[in-house]
Image 1 (cartoon, rainbow, N blue to C red):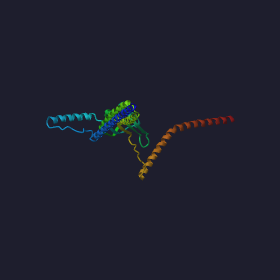
Image 2 (cartoon, rainbow, N blue to C red):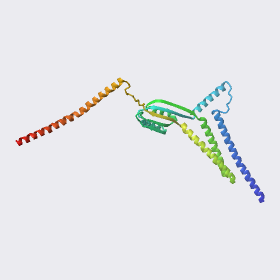
Image 3 (cartoon, rainbow, N blue to C red):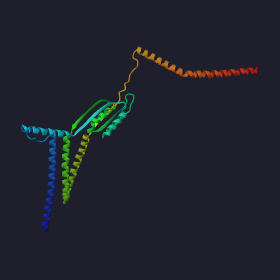
Image 4 (tube, helix red, strand yellow):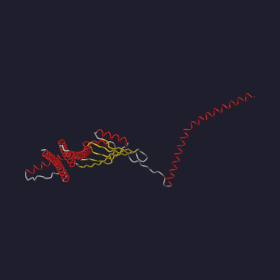
Length: 302
């Protein structure tokens, strides 16, 4: 009896283990099928794998209307990444950069990078910012930024990632469902080997799910927030070389220098002349006082 009971328990464990393994294999087959479907969808540019044949007449018109409705819906649900660059000439780059940051933040955006260069004898300074602007408000924010100065160049480019976003959503949904099934199997498992197998499989699925979700968050951020590189500079400083190159140029430069020296000398004389007059009065008073004292001394001696 004990021998038959042991055989029965072993057979039950083998049957349970076979059921667990079969479930894992089935989940793997489902994931592989979804991945293959996603690849096929990407290769075909997101178009359906098969299309119904439409006959002529009223059915053709009906099919055309359905196709146009589908096109309108798909264009409304497109996921597009927009990037661009805006080059502007402003009076004060630092002040303009502060105003640009305020405009972007007021629209719900953010500043991902900012750098400034101080003014020197060759240029008036500059500022560079990486702006993240909500895609729905991109045009209005750019219009506000145009008020900071003169626009030298503005360009944008778009990248359609609708297919990638859709495929990621499908893969994440499938992985979540398979993870939940494995968790349910893990709760029912009793054999240690089954538990180890299910836990390893669950860890792998969860790691893959986290990776896909990170990619999805990155794509969603790029789609929802457009990236604009803003460059703010001043008018270039023009350095004029006025050194004389010919004899007449040298003569003219010397004459102008002499006139400038004469004008400066007259200014200096005009400034010092009142002091000279005051010093003359003081000197005259001192001399008169000395003369009066000498004359008195002479009269006393006589």
